[in-house]
Length: 238
Length: 250
Image (cartoon, one colour):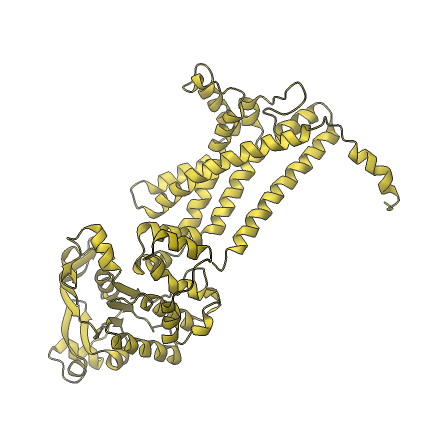
């Protein structure tokens, strides 16, 4: 294609078949739900993984197996369970969370927790025991030793968080069930995410729109990965 | 200063040693010699208050560690330094490694400032690196060091917070003669600072070079403790004599 063709294509590229703010609101909802769910999951999963990694107790292998199995848990089943939990008949029915972003966060929290826990546990378990011994021998408390291990395992933990984010942001089934893929009358997303929008646009034959939304999703994941890798590298000599 | 009295240790029902007693005073180097597998590392970990003995007592400066409150035991543990056979340096710069023992003794505000690079490097870091001849490596990453240099940093790391007692577990077993000489000189420096040093080694020549007293640990416990010269020249115990002469082979 010659450079001369670009001006001809440019209006077509700029003239996207979106209502104003549509894509922006979808990206916002996707990021809001996924980042919140992964942040909460990280706060929960990392201490749990460190506790399991440090402790010796009967059934530790079984616990690890359960965590690993959770990585393959079907997302639609998670969606169904969360939908039941927040429905009028469910234990959280009084909170009126059906088809809300909060319910989507709950669902993605459940999905992101097993990979974050399992990969963090593997990373923590892989840290040389001599490092932990050295931290204790140099006067560190158990907390100090845990912090040293976390620092040594930081690349693995970053991978775990990325895996959790990847699972959350690319999830379709459960967010569709608990979120309902809703937009307001002016076309602004309430619970529509990039994935559910792609699914809807493709089903309606809007392949161009679906492809553009797909490209936005990929760009989003790449950006998050790049940011995490950048901060991981900059902390090496600390 | 640091005294273990009638201590016993076992792992998974396997006895390591029974009723073992040993002590080291300020400014003294005690060599613990014996073949591999007799429990030298376990003895040092017991002295470092990392392992609670099945029986017996471990006291530092007259304070019994395992009947003390946990906070008091932590305070006692922080008066002891330990260097392992493997350097096990942290994934950080040499300076950060040496600084670690000082930082964990600091208030959290200082530690956070140090982590953010806002705190001055303590003088003790440079002084300790000077003892092992690695002042110029302070800003290098620990991964860039040779095995011998890493072990020297490991020594400096334990020396930096000025412990009362320094425990060295086979500190030169993997080192070349030059790095071994640096570590042995550093042991002499620690002694001159009034630090009690315990060196576990299977290298009897090293024990002869650096130790004021020697304890011989064989598979049935400590057979003999005494001045280095007496142990090597005229041991009282027959098994000690055989071990030193090489007749008792493991």
